[in-house]
Each structure stands twice: as structure tokens, then as C-alpha cells.
Length: 195
Image 1 (cartoon, helix red, strand yellow):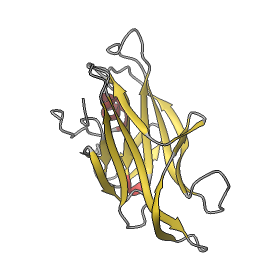
Image 2 (cartoon, helix red, strand yellow):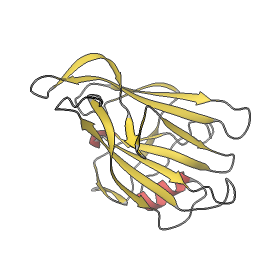
Image 3 (cartoon, rainbow, N blue to C red):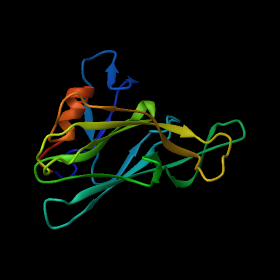
Image 4 (cartoon, rainbow, N blue to C red):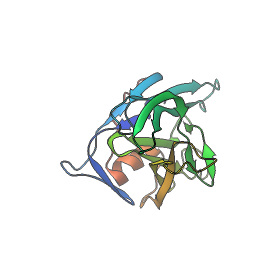
């Protein structure tokens, strides 16, 4: 399972609650993020941001990956991006601020995963209900988060952060949320499953 489910989505897309639509295709191809440092422009300012992928071993089937987003972008008085020190880009969902996303599950299925849509500054998180066990197909909840800029300098919130725009539930039940991403949202999993 390690890194085989971490995908960065590239292409021009629009989010419409439960559907990601690519104007030129019926699906969206994805590129795997690798363990370590991944330089990607997810803030849309033409400067490569940083996504760090690290593995947390458990010496059982329940190891997981931890993914954090960083940027050097900041805003000047005209709300233009300026390069500065590295800053973490938190995700605000479930009523809490998260400094990372965990990709986890069991030997049979991934229950929690995400996709980053680079050109749109959107993260889609998929969470599957547990059911009877890790392999019991259940509905998947998709949470759509959009990159937001704190242009007014609101205290307590960073310059950039991902905030919830909408949520939806899958129409079918799935063991692995990767299948739900493909079948429900049209995101193809092209990652190497042998990693």
C-alpha cells in the first residue's frame, strides 16, 4: 500500500460537488507522489511549493503515510505573492485544523486518502466508514477543500490554508477509497502499486 495511493492530479478540472469534470476527457490521470520531497505549484503563483511524504511503520498491516503541504508564498499589501520562509499550509475540516493528511487503512483496503488538484488549489479527501472490518465495503465521504488566502490578515489563520467547500457521499459502497475516486469522481489511479 505504501505510496501507491498518494496521487497528484494534473489537468484542467472543475469541482461540482460529487463530480470532477475534465473538459477534454472522461477521466483524470494522476501522478504518484513519492516518499520524500515533492515540488509542486499548488498555490498557483508559478513558484514550486513543497509536499512532504513520510511513512509511519507499525510492523503490521496498518502502517500509514503522512503528507504535509508547505509554501514560500506570502502576500504583499496588494495581495500579490512574495517568496518568504517556508510555511506549513494547514487543512481545516471536521471542525479542526490539521497540519497533515494521513493515508491509512489495512492490508485489504485504504480507508482514508486524498487527491490534490494542482492547478485549482483543491484537495479532495476520501474517508470510508469502517463497517465490520477493514475489508467491509462501505460508503465513502468526499470532502472538497479549496486553497484560501488570508488576504485580510485574520488573526489565528495562516497566509494560506485549505478550507472546506463541500462534502458528498459516494453512491456505491467500496472497500478501497481509490476505487471510489476512480468510479465516483473519474480520477484514475495510475500510481505504481508495487511500491
